[in-house]
Image 1 (tube, helix red, strand yellow):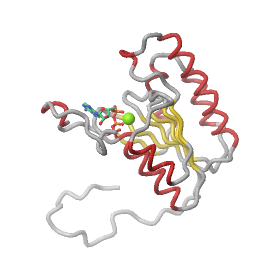
Image 2 (cartoon, helix red, strand yellow):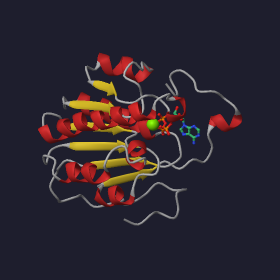
Image 3 (cartoon, protein in one colour):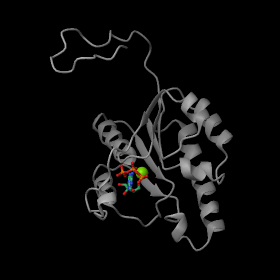
Image 4 (cartoon, helix red, strand yellow):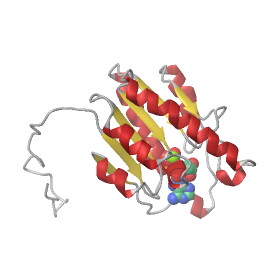
Length: 193
Ligand code: ATP
Ligand code: MG
């Protein structure tokens, strides 16, 4: 696909021809240092739910009792979600416990992917426990390779491993141009949580 050099006039041609391949479940990765990785995954959950798709969200860093704005909204949409983490690692008192939670959470997520009862499964912030080796990356890759054909999996988190990027169908890097935190603006309800 060629990028238009001149964006000052409306395009006269359709940018890309119609795709002729078969539809199938995708692996979608949202990575990078900018804001929007989790937000975009939540957006896909909303979109898929609107199409009557069965969806589920696993959050690897959030604690099970976390209740952000998105959790209230997901409940209204009857989208199951669960926190599998112990919060931020620098706040955790017991990293062995955090590690155990991540492994248990992954076992559950792996089953949800393999079972085929969901059309879209989000593994939010799973790159962190994978990069810390709390979850075996080979196991994540094989679970993605062997999943039922219709299952879409969305993965978010910074520093997504190369092998995951290679396997994924759609990879987006949220690149930070600016972030309000740097101007000393704290996290806000409805925007960050
Ligand atoms: P969001 O949940 O807002 O889409 P994210 O998933 O892209 O953010 P994470 O790395 O998961 O980003 O961010 C955890 C928290 O840090 C979120 O509250 C997010 O808004 C905030 N954040 C995201 N990017 C940055 C950044 N570049 N600098 C500081 N804070 C950030
Ligand atoms: Mg996030």
